[in-house]
Image 1 (tube, rainbow, N blue to C red):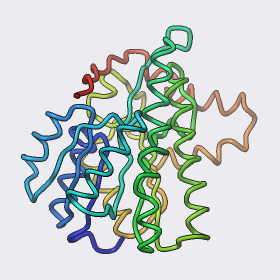
Image 2: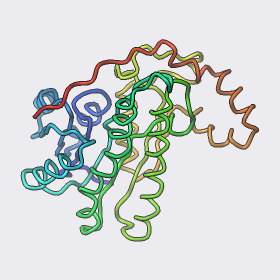
Image 3: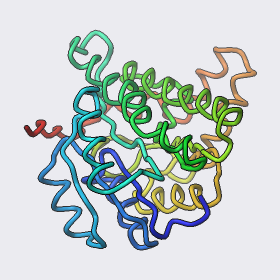
Image 4: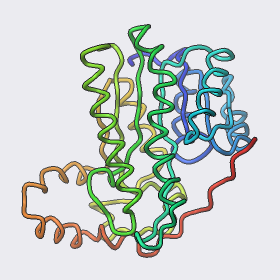
Length: 272
């Protein structure tokens, strides 16, 4: 999507963190920003801060009925969506046997199933117009499993597969509609409060503004993938080695100890 001026850009999980950072940069480039978030009041505050006629809606993206209703409101009140950024995400940060059924369902509801509900709400219009862009914010954990992240990593592996399959479909049916998948290492937004990296020079905790800038640049240049930092790009190549060697490399880099001191932050309750 070479030109962002005047485009309607909808960001899920847009009230804070990297979602808000992307919203600010998109607004600065002339896009008409629409924020969706479980915390509608916080989304409204972020929209007021951004200005530029930014709009905000409370929406639980794991609820397909609610997604359909709020999507209809956006189309009526703002117009067709040109750029969709599926950014909403949650993390539990617990070993498998400490996860409740509700933890697991919530992770997949927000991180995976929401991709289907939200994208289907807007993709048909993009295909009809012959242009648009769908961004899926996955994770480095969508390329390598990590201890204490069985639900999260599985949901993000699914997100990477979602983007790859969607990209293949659109190349055949609607080549003017592009996709981008984003696979960053931990981002310093509070969502992963307490995580540690053994080698900051190789695997730094990323700054949200830097990640947001890279994502917006990728959208402008129709790049299909953003993987940060560089070392994460080597993970697929490491899979040619025996599993024991792959696991040894991950342990050596401290990947499987990175969540040992995880704290995270509480998630807001949905609004009516």
